[in-house]
Length: 462
Image (tube, rainbow, N blue to C red; front, side, top):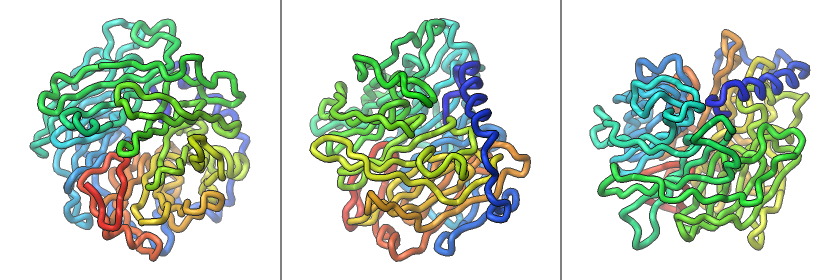
């Protein structure tokens, strides 16, 4: 979701997007489910919806991380912890009320890391919003000790330039296993923000000593676009300034960056000095939002968050090539475009809908993904033939009853089930039963931070 921090500029961008989209042709009413009603393909089951932590009912659910038998769901007002040891009887365990969007989360052992890209009066959970033009304002990363699932403890904050819109956990290499790193993506600098001045063509790297996490600190702020990024392409939501999100494939020492106007590949052999090795732009992409490698690491799926997550882009007027996924092969170190994928189910003009966060379904030898589309719901896509991606299943709801925004932020596959964070309803639990995805049920993972990819074989990985 587009950052809410720089409010005036954000509203101007969204208003412009909305104005552009109000003229769209309505989808056939007969194809759109009644407000709030669940519809699925025959191979997808809606197992249930888990409520949010009390106190988070009116704030938006964001990203999800998994470890062991637990799912951690970020929220603009904090996060919730669920016991998913029995997905059919999953239950809320606890959580933390700690406002500051987006609170995207990653977990590692007893630590949870949360991204805050919302300028606050201080780093505490009692903070209130305060303009980034005030030097003393805080935004960055919060670190929680989650050893006691019923009583998480906030142990450390790390301030970063322009906050932390998203963060990506990067395990240390052999010989450096006592540390993890966080690649912090942020953007939208301004001459009026003392801690977020242009040009902001960089990321922040936080080093976290696992045995002493309260010593976590920014160790590098590498400039990744020394000559500036894509700033002039017509139709861009924002000019490139840093990245929106980075996905790492640590064991292959590669990363893919979705950097607003640019899609990039990194060599992360030196964890503190990522280096861009390939870069591409696309006239159909308004906002490079996120990236997913396939298991072999020879394809990347990038998403375009046209309209910043607040616009209705899943309709005939916008068409199939914008607000979509773009599938690239990596050939001789270069990104080679193959095709677009976008859900074909047209949504109502009241429904914010665009390509958003998804994960691989671990089927050996295939490239199958589950993905969130806000009010477009959840799509299951076979990308094995990159030139001919094909949807193989879906879950969605009719429009929000009040005609407002909402939908599914992230949809991820973990140990046999799909978990989808709905803005306001809570955590949806889904199951797909299909010969193409059934082999994944044999793969067990003990941790999943989706932006920290790891390979899987026949029998899973750790």
